Amino acid sequence: MGAGVMTSRAVGIRPWQVPIRCAILFALLGAMLEGCTPETPDQDVPVVKVEEPALPATPLFEPDSAFAFVAKQVGFGPRVPGTKAHQSCGNWMVARLDAAGANVVEQTGTVMAFSGERLPLRNIIGSFHPERKERILLFAHWDTRPFADKDDERTNQPIDGANDGGSGVGILMEIARHLSQKEHGPGVDILFTDVEDHGQPTGAMGMDENSIDTWCLGSQYWVKNTHVPNYTARFGILLDMAGARDARFYQEALSMQYAPAIVRKVWKTAASLGYGDRFVQETKYFVGIDDHIPVNKSLRIPSIDIIEYDPATQAFGPYWHTHDDNMDVIDPATLKAVGQTVLEVVWKER
Ligand code: AHN
Ligand code: ZN
Image (cartoon, rainbow, N blue to C red; front, side, top):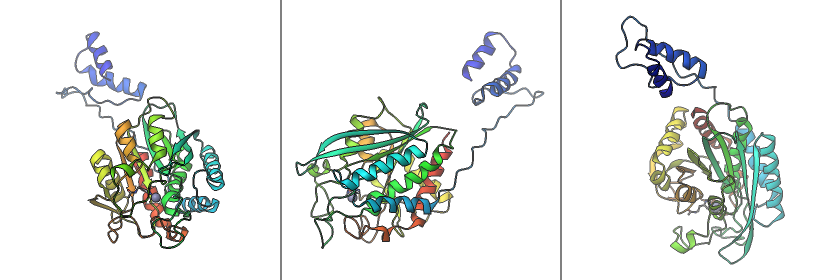
């Protein structure tokens, strides 16, 4: 509209004509009137006040659908990179995104685990309105931990990863089901990162400088090789362990460090929807590393992590990296609180 005002002045129209010109231009272009109203409007001419058009209503996030998407993944078996279950689940995810109307890109590669083992990597990206320049990034890891290092039994066997792996994918798959109906605002990219959970086990919760890089191999790979060149987004939201019964989401300290405005936006939205009891407005430092860190550091996309904090453990839920991370811990009510909040945040962007 700045250009419109400049044109008006160039042809020498009187100041009182400016609002009318602007209104006509607004109607023609469907653009915002911002900056066009003169500082001192003429008393005789009514000031044209154009409201921003109302946004379409946010769709209802279906918790049972999200729950079924989590169960579907668990049904394949542990999604450990290099296994048949992992491959089958990945194929299903590609098909689901495609059915939701996304433009699907798969990114494959090989990464080295802390053990020296070579692992096949498969990041899966579903894009809605890929032609739009303005974008929102929603992401979650889809691989599951190859062992149960926090369990006292069957420590060397892979876990179901219903919450740690399954929940983020389940929520984003349900969100994806609605995204083709979103005609307004930024395009959305759903990124399913692989090989997040193959990190080096530690005795304690803490992690030293060397072991931190052994986590999040899929997101580390993606930030160096984005699915489109020079990829960027307005902001990013990572979901990790977002579906356990009675889960509470505190403001994760690294998210607060890199993207405080996005944390506030999301927690405020949750409160407005009646989920203020789950989205606690208190910062907790409990995540050593997660997929939002490479995205913040390398791509400088302000990105946050919605991840469970359990005051009892002062970290994640007691099921974490044990065989208890199965469908029994998943609650549709938690999936709904997180899913509806993220859907609302996405729908409110213009
Ligand atoms: C910690 O930050 C202690 N762990 C890495 C993040 C993670 C593992 N998320 C899921 N599993
Ligand atoms: Zn994990």
